[in-house]
Length: 119
Image 1: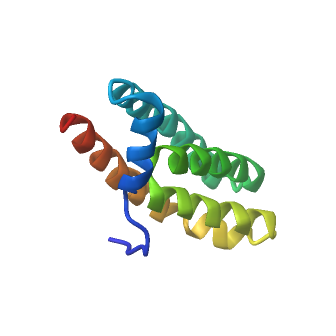
Image 2: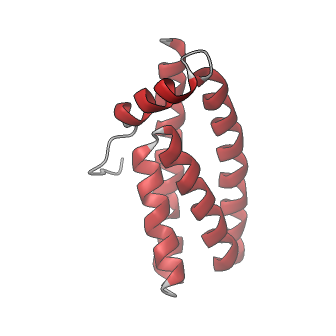
């Protein structure tokens, strides 16, 4: 299990989302995020398999943005780190971090489902 200095879920961001949209919207946002992130992760897996750094960069950029917007902090930060490695041409390093993405994505999914059930 990888360790990260960031929480899986940043409750202050979740609280802000609830404040901005209303508690009744949060389950819809979580479902939408989970669906989109599953697509992004599939695209990332294909990009890593093919050695396609450009697609990986695009997918981690989008995953990072949506993750941070809903409070999925650790995955969002790791996505940003991989994006920057791609931008710097450090593709091997970016590809090497992919297994951590899948691990954090699973932890994030579980945490979001727990959060949703507690609403």
